[in-house]
Length: 227
Image (cartoon, rainbow, N blue to C red; front, side):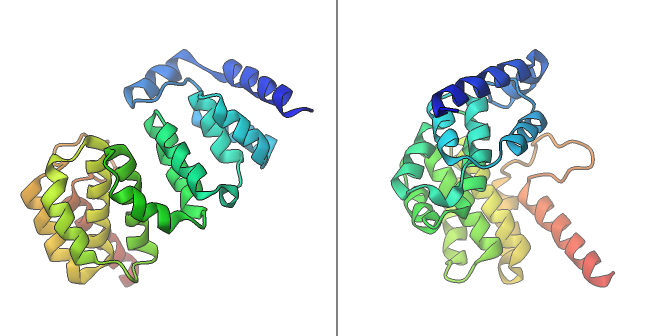
C-alpha cells in the first residue's frame, strides 16, 4: 500500500479510537487528543516498526498521530538536525516527553543534543536538555560536573519556566538519589527553594518535592539491599 494511503487509513483509525472523555482528561494535562494511550500502543504493536510511515504521521501535526509515529519509528534512523527540528515542532507535553525518552535517548546524537538544548534560550527546548542530563546522572554520570549542575539548579530553578523547572527538579532529585556524596546538598537546595513542595500527589505516589522524593527512593534502595 502506498505510504499516503496508509497514512489516511491510520488517521481514520485514530479518529475512530478518539473518545471525548479521554480528550477531556488529556486536555487537563495540556494534551489535545482523545486517544487512550493503551489503545495507541495496541495499534503500534499491530503496525510494527515502519520508519517511512512514522515520518508521514509526524508531518500531519496531529498529536495522536505523532505519538503513534514515535512508537513506530526507528530511533537511530534520525539525523541530529531532524531531531532538533522535531523537538521545536512539538506542541504538547506528551509528544515532547515521548520524543525525548523514546527516541532521542536512543539516538547516537543524544549527547550532542543534550549539550545544545541545555543552553537553548527557549525554556521548553532547554527542558529536553535537562531531561537528557537527568538520564545521564542515573545511567552514565562519568564526565558530568554534578557539583556544577547543582550550582545551576540552585541559581535558576526557582524562577524557571514550568516545564524547565520540572526537569531541573528531576535532575536535582536524581543527583540526590544516585550520588550519596552530593545528597546533603541536593536535599538542602530542595528544602530552601521549596519547588513543587505543594504539588498534588495521588495516594500511593511519591511527591516530586526533591527532599521527599530523595528520602523515599533512598529508603527503598536500603530496604532492597537489606532484603
